[in-house]
Length: 296
Image 1: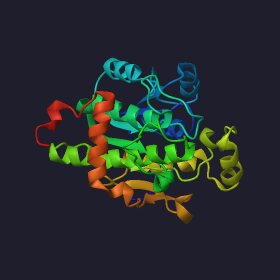
Image 2 (image 1 turned 60 degrees about the vertical axis):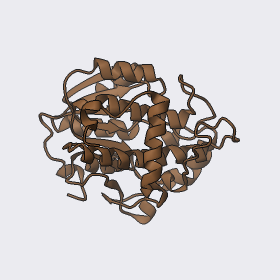
Image 3 (image 1 turned 90 degrees about the horizontal axis):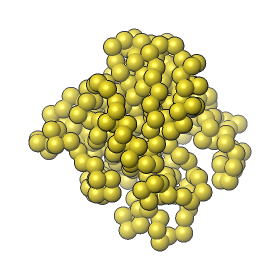
């Protein structure tokens, strides 16, 4: 299955799926669809009240757990408190072009939330993941660059869109290196990625700052959150290979039926992916699980 409609999503009974950022947008639709198909879905959300409000609109087995990806202590607490195995981890949550700020641990907010928080969460949960890790990136990865001399924007003039592109490129490099490590450890788990194209979620419709310009340019031609969630759902339930990347198949991957898509040359740089992994381990003090690392 390398394309997907909602009607084609098979029953998910018996699977446990963790979805970060599941109180709105792509994450909410993903969680809602999987729960309706029979999965036990954990809504991992920063705002528990909003998470509970989202869960109240869903049918099926849905639970809400607090997770603030901009606080590594919250990431550790979530991983420690989560019971049982996880079939699929969907790293969906993200922030987009906010004013400059830092996470609790001092990271630039977009890198810290979109990449480092998910990096730590994935490695902490990985011994319990049974099937796959899905990480949501963006077409913005194409103008991203990993600046190892100033990852956290401590010396450069801050440019929100460039920082967003760096974080989304990091998502793809993380997926590739995670897949390499899983294969080396002879793990049955696969790592895959997806992007929603141009979808009318709160990331665009919250009209403040740079997002106001993005709204004016994008929303008139954007697809719905339901359509934007289809690439994530394809990556979650489809018969796709490790390190694949799902996105809309239409013009410039902005909208259209989900399919497997390409990525930039920077996103295919294995040396940069390995270096970013090593730096991310140092920054988060979270490493690839020892019980999976023996064959690496």
